Image (cartoon, rainbow, N blue to C red; front, side, top):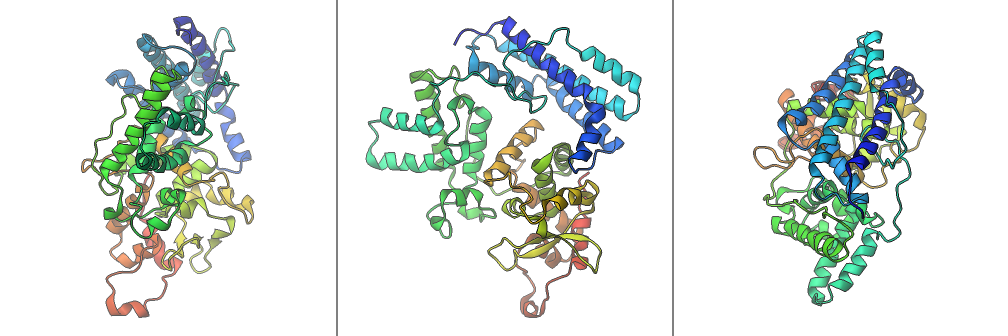
Length: 474
């Protein structure tokens, strides 16, 4: 690959500015297009709050010197097409320039929601590029527009790279080879066997380690009878059943050998390996919860999303349900309770009696338009786009990284997508004195009721309303 130049960076920034301009110019039609999609547009207050929140997030790295999401994106993009060695400062500067343009878009949005159309138009006009260039643009951080990417037929997929790597490691003993192949089964499932290796970045490696850290020990029941994918998808693993820390470190070591030693040093496919700078030195701990401030950040961000991402994460935050329970919901599961007049979710995809339950639908979900989203689905899955549960985990990891919410809390407890369930349960228990009510909503077996258990009926939707109505994130 040839050396990256300042002209390459400037040309690319001009193309990104064209997208920024298009994004700002399209603000007035957002409400209509949202409505045509069957969703409810943001209110004036929600629109301003979201724009101000994003502006604060974009502004922070400019003043504290941390790496922004844009800089990370630009580094990843340029390294796929150029030798970026020695251009790190220029890429960082480009990231700041682009973030300042994105902040202008949010200022335009605030002006529009304040109905100050003159100020809105002034900001939009200031963003208009003098020339609209046409370089490579791939998944820019502005929106999801894509333009064809340079193709390199010599770039192997992860599965192909593994086959070559195993041949390269001809000195492996049969026992050690079997152990490494066992680890790669999970790495391949998480990163994707057909993924070209140049599309795997540092964030993907970090996400992979998080998923691995939350795997169960395979030598214990019921896990040893599960497939690798079932282990990845399994929620509510007992604290003592998590994989050992040294085993997680072994996954990183294998990735370093594959991506750094082989694909970077030997094959020269990378200039900088995606494992570069990735460390793992955390002792495994139980799941932790998010703070109220963190939940406000998360839920505000969830509201800004579209399609399945918006509703999956909002449902996880407001129901305390498991990842798989939400991912497999059907339109028929959204039902009306005649007694209370409230809608609820009927969760039936469960292996336990307690897991089959009714979860009252939080008023905020109704207010945001979930019923409008679910009605056109007829009897099908609400989220057919989710073909595997780890897809939810991967998207959530990126959201948490974007919002600068730490993976570990002060007690070294892990916070992942499943922690939304823990956070819901913690908040519900603080609001409701009757533990049985919370247990039924989240699908736990009723406990601490002794001899009375045989006489305890399933609680009604009306009786369960206090659990969900006490949850306030935004």
